[in-house]
Length: 224
Image (cartoon, rainbow, N blue to C red):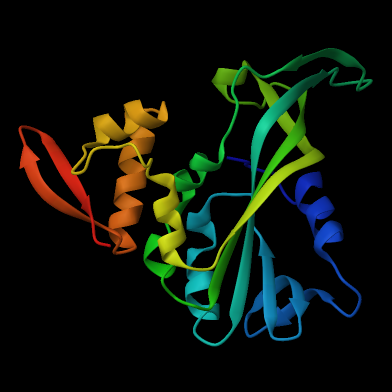
């Protein structure tokens, strides 16, 4: 998922894209600052971990209708800049590619809120550039390269979820029920870790139930 430092260019660009005439930007509602206020609709663009916005959502959806917009990077070009002159040293396409299924990496933090009719989720698949600077402050995985910014290049697709049952569309039609996390992972060609997050979230949404346990694996059945 997209992680940002301060307000990234992606966040700022999406605000401009979604802004409509008459909208109020960075408006204070109750004790929170909202990205876009459109009448009675509050629009929040969240590029970071959902755990950081959970409490905000939990409080707001009690009295307001909230549209939560979350971008997922499908294709990412990494640009390495010189730390002094900011010249481009290297540009490459990351071998890692995101998909809409990555939303479950974040849904685990708010899956119990999804059933609230005041919460709408919009997922956007995008292409982006990640600007890195060799300043010695980045994590060890990036060998000291810091993420300076992320820029939106193109919106590829988007999907709106206004009903919890829509998330059942992620369960393949061909999967044999009951199914385990391993079966789900193999069917969707995803990691077992992501499959576990899917089934955890869907159970929290009251869409899946544990059918039985075979060995160390749970078997899941649909509630509908």
